[in-house]
Length: 529
Image (tube, rainbow, N blue to C red; front, side, top):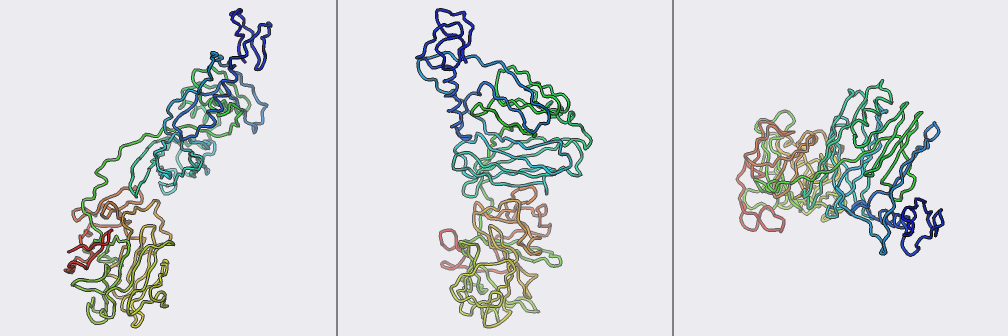
């Protein structure tokens, strides 16, 4: 509706219905100019077509009133002063646009469910188009099981973002406010290129708190609108600027006024609380991209191993890792294996029945796999797979080198991680060494899944390779620590004060590698030691 626009009657206060050619006082109206109703519909249509990630936002429609149909009491009417009509113009009006700050829309929280299980729905809105099509969302709080949780936020084909649902429980929690820290990361080539953070607070009320107390406490934290609610009712106003509204909700009814509805239609109000949290982009220091000790093979030496611990944790970060015979001069393999007897390591004798290139472990299409390239063969769980026939690795698989003579070297797959494989010796060398075969330039995701790891592998530190060197990742705090010979390892999870990093995978021996033999880098060239 609009007021009379006849220029000969400028003081006429009669309203003109949409489509009418004259007001109630029979004053003719101009039909060539678009009405405010048409302009408002055009603005709403343009707003509904805009994506949440487009970075622009149309102005809020006049008023959209909602009433929860689940309320037992009769619905209360909500009246608002109509918005003034826009001035007519000869040209069609374009919707006004302004930048939208990236934020999380959090909904689904109901403080009345104190002591029970709840689910928060988080929707990412206003994110720039330069962000990666999949982001990593990490949350830390005392309410979340194990203190932290991680989700992947994926962009849909429409351009918006798929919502994320986070479960938590306030059972056996002291009433009060609990902080939830949110970190949103954008990755590229395994590295963090953008990071956003925000923090919000969840109120856990007393178990005997009344509904009126709960709602008053929540509404007191949102002071941009003053709302009066009687008899444990809920009255909410969202969106809009410069509107004077009078809202009343009685007898446990819920009045929900949404001034930012895309179509300006009646919206359903739910019995939960929702709000927006602004995402603040933080700068990532360039120093995090530099590793103090770049290498593709190293070893963590335990000077005082306890019962069940290995003396050497040998680290390899290669696309293809070759297992073979131990040689002091120009070995053909990366992982050098020797036979262990009751008297210790024997680099001669049965060790000579291993091929220089005995097996290859690489990452295939369906996971990590092993291939027999030897002269003497190998056994996987007691069976020979055949030469040059890759076989997928499985947790608990027994790898025996070779097939002609038993118990020369016996390895067990104790963990298959998203970024690597952990092998333990199952023979007399069980206390001497174990092997980390990691994918180069690959960082694992948290929370770390230890469901496919044997107990001896679950007790080991979480390591990965990135920026040309090895890193330690704390699964609790998500803190990354670059590993170097000068790094103090005593404070890192899974390591102790007797651990140190050696720059060579076999620091106890002097391995001589001349040109043409040695560990391969990313382009297949040899590294000379």
